[in-house]
Length: 426
Image 1 (tube, rainbow, N blue to C red):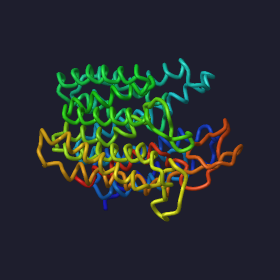
Image 2 (tube, rainbow, N blue to C red):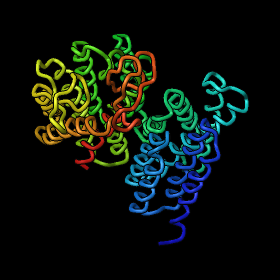
Image 3 (cartoon, helix red, strand yellow):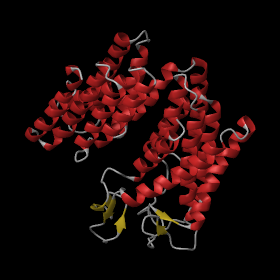
Image 4 (tube, helix red, strand yellow):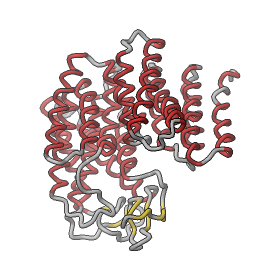
């Protein structure tokens, strides 16, 4: 192996060393930049796929015990995706914005004595993001630098929303550049109307509206059919959610969907849309991703109406209603119906071509979701009432981790299960 292949190890080693000499507030930003640097070095050096997987594994392993795990997971997904479509821009720009521009903005923010993420933080973050994005667009390809302004602003909004998922939204925004302008404009209009209606009906909060417009614009720009299927899923989820019989919110979050929940259910479909814009036939993968989300949502909502107490999928012991990993006969039937529903929507357009993607994708996504929910999703104990919950706060206090991984929450489980379901049909 060429000596250059070992260069990406240097920032990773530096990350391990430097974190011992930093205050807690600075560790996350420095680690994020250094871990991102490993993947950026690997991309720039043009390493082969097996070496990229090796460095990606190192990045994830190095961050398992730190707060950078979300950035590492999305960084790896973005890197592998960029390799598959043979376009480094899809990885370099999101990783540079979220892994380099944000720590720089935080540095300036702290020097200026602005510790909170207010107006000053937004200005600094926007400035750095726009500068980095515009420079990369100009230097790496013949693309209008004004796209750098748009994506820089989206990076600012996403980082202010939640730094764990910011790179995912930047990747989605990258797809706008490669779509047909007419389809992107039409997709933006239709997504804005549909998301605004969901906001009016209190199915989405404001950030959920913004996230819905971003995801919807990309999906419509890639395939109006996939947008139609996604919209049908969201309508069904909203209707079922309104009639849900979950008694409390310890295991099931009620109310408006936020941008993170929109991303969790739409990221797999967004990846399929990006593949389509890159010239791949990924319609089936997109259908499988939506089928997985639909099957899981229907199983959760309709399963809550079961008179039987759910059993944990791994041990078959009785558990409380609503707990992740719990299954009931009614919930299992509902998951099959959810996948069938998505297949039926494709029937007038493709006949039986995507039967497997609808039924198998839905069943597999729901099964993987339940398995991850039962084994590695974080479970917490409330300090006040001693009840078990899946939330990091309860009764107004921080909860104590009892089981699973602290970073593996329900949103991450939903996101990963849909990606696994679609990956089967690559």
